[in-house]
Amino acid sequence: MPEPVDLAAVLSTVDQPWSPRTVAVLNDYDLRVVHTHGEFTRHSHPETDEVFLVLSGSLTIRMDDGDVTLAPGQLYVVSKGTPHQPYSPDGAQVLLVEPSATVNTGDTPSELTAERRVV
Image 1 (cartoon, rainbow, N blue to C red):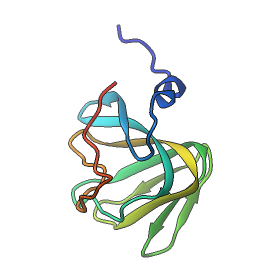
Image 2 (image 1 turned 45 degrees about the vertical axis):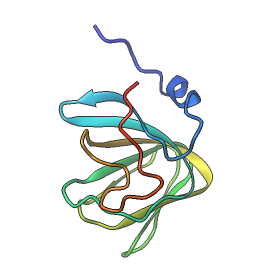
Image 3 (image 1 turned 180 degrees about the horizontal axis):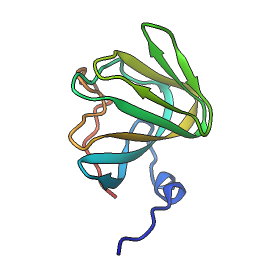
Image 4 (image 1 turned 180 degrees about the vertical axis):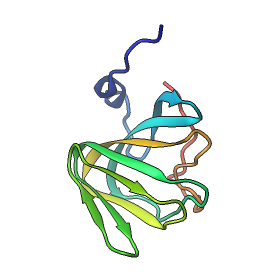
């Protein structure tokens, strides 16, 4: 039987912002935790939606139709193909849910593109 995942313990091992860690796999989807701080690459995921659940701090998702700001305990789904740019001036801890093959920078590779890391 698998062990429970301690999200705080996993996040305590992550020393760089925007470096997601896969903490569990649900069917073909990764549950990833990430520290955010500052601006991320503006991008989209043409083939999939993306779920953001803020665990702590505050995260703003900039989109053409308006910004969405999330506080702890709030969740937002960015629809597939929607250009978005996560932004967190003071930092946040976030749980992401997306297909396992999803690249964090979507269709816009950058220096923030991270390899899939399973813990």
